[in-house]
Image (cartoon, rainbow, N blue to C red; front, side, top):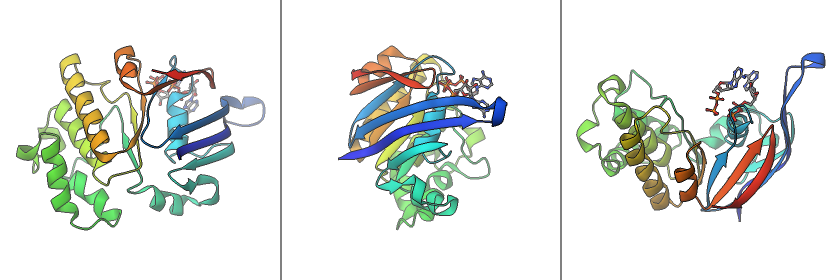
Length: 225
Ligand code: ADP
Ligand code: ADP
């Protein structure tokens, strides 16, 4: 039961003599409920691969099936619609909407995904990440660790099949980062979601079921953590 099936995925940027191969034939299957650490040096293609698997960017060639969606068969609008509620994303730089409260940041995407009682559910999601007392705060009124906890609540609130995280603790100090990471693992386990996480942290990678390592646009290692 694969949540991710990628076949000979390539990404080429630019064209003609200026074309650069970023991803050079990625084959990757990830089973439901697995946690996978994506490792590799800077520039090896981790963020590009995550962008393609999360439907934010199109592959140049190959086949991508994620959470039951054949990305190649969907146009941009259908893809954007289909991703809602199925795929959650947590990025290094939080990306909360500054004009919305914590509660709205979590609830509005759920409403867009057609989920009933979005505000009530958002409130319990925020309580689950320890932010019951911060629901009406705006992002600028929250610490970095609190903002990232809102981002976790937002990503996992709709109970997505799949959550992507790109160095989610990259902007946090070690203690705050460890607490945020605990919450991410705890909430994703509660939601039964598959997790793909980009990290440079070997301790964090060891918490995952599997480690996939990229090098120069290719998978160079794939092992149990
Ligand atoms: P990561 O933290 O995922 O390893 P990097 O820190 O290498 O990513 O890159 C952060 C951002 O900078 C990414 O959006 C990436 O596309 C871009 N980037 C990475 N390498 C380069 C480069 N050599 N030149 C320009 N932009 C780059
Ligand atoms: P990683 O996440 O492993 O650091 P990235 O996926 O960010 O790697 O980048 C892989 C390669 O693609 C790098 O060489 C980077 O310079 C290049 N790259 C990424 N985004 C862009 C972009 N928008 N334009 C040009 N090159 C890019």
